[in-house]
Image 1: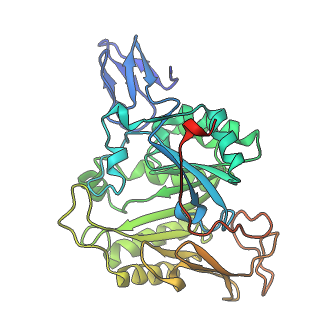
Image 2 (image 1 turned 90 degrees about the vertical axis):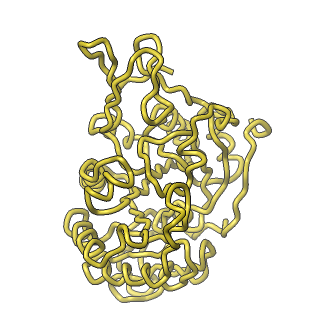
Length: 355
């Protein structure tokens, strides 16, 4: 499929303008993301209509804790990525250079109909970064909206301003992966830059109605120092405000960082305390068993609002219109009546049998 964000250069190459990499391509070359390529003197999306797999998940797995709690989300991704994270936890998909990874084919309309049939409240573009398959994601979001289903982007936020505005006009919620808080971390471990990600976060929170949550994977010895967590959470509180939920998740050895140990649970708890002390009101831990760190408490009165044990919900004290059941203060987020009851189930879906 032809794409929009590119231009010709005077030396005969074509530059992709989707993300800050701005790959410059000769005929037949692919960008670093792998799925955007020069064909016939233009940049095309080679993965349109094809996926690396479909699955129904709990929305909390994205992770989104303040967006339709307890509901199910129809998740899918494609292949490739525009970052090169050495610690990638989905490397088999995001680093794939094989088209046969894209085994499932589905139109945007088929995805929307399947999500509706399975009772999903939303569709999530995840597993690899949806900005690289923006056209497919936007068309699918539109098809979902036509059926009353919401659209979620799970993204690293590495996208240029003009396509960013178009892309997020189609999204209802986003979890943005803030991988670290130094340019050195992004350069050394992601082959990218921090500044564009911070720009995306500012844009989403200040200029759109997209519901935003942030995730940071804490890697021992790389981005887990008290000083870096302190600087990052002060920035979030001052630049984005206190109501953007923040998730600290545990690293496990993977891809090109097999020599780094898993993140201790104590590191996540320490990071959570630093963030709370700096004014971030809703801070969560992930990839570990930590009922307190995964539950939601009212920022005004401290009451337990949503009890979580991994992806299972227990006590629920948020009113249908999104207020604390104890003191009545509004809880930041998107709430639509009683919580869903999907639980922790994961349901793989074969689209060939679902059209």
